[in-house]
Image (cartoon, rainbow, N blue to C red; front, side, top):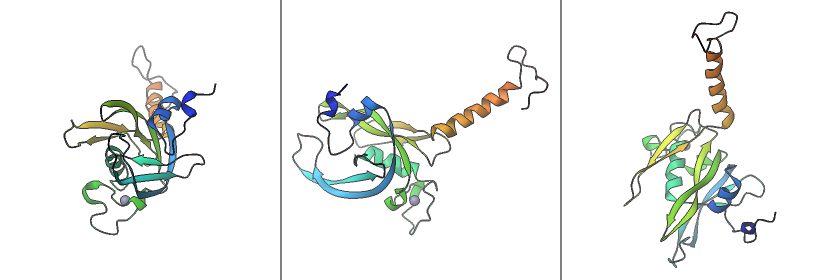
Length: 186
Ligand SMILES: [Zn+2]
């Protein structure tokens, strides 16, 4: 099938295509600030916006919004960026504020429903990060909006390893009697 949505590819990765194709894993190549038009067609102004490019071939850049900026600051915070701060502000409040530390990090992007002016559209949201060992819940408070919680997951393999360890621990117990089954290692 030639998907009609692929007839007019945008210069940037879109929530619509992530909705159609499912979440995508990408590795951050660069974080820059560029002057560009507002995504809201009703606002004909140019303003600086953060753009994240990726290492994967064919992965188009991502125009980051405030929600995702806050999520990434939290995801790479808490020492998870693996870098030493060069100044006191760089890792203030458990956040990673130095975008140079974000380069090389692998994250998962998925689709979310967002309000853009009067319209409800598909937006992009961070759904996973390789630097996580456990799901991370980030509460984002934007002005004039209800606080919203977003869960960012560790890589699938790491999560399923943890789950299979739980299952292995249960394997030594008889599911009917709850008694230990001899010969099965805990
Ligand atoms: Zn950092």
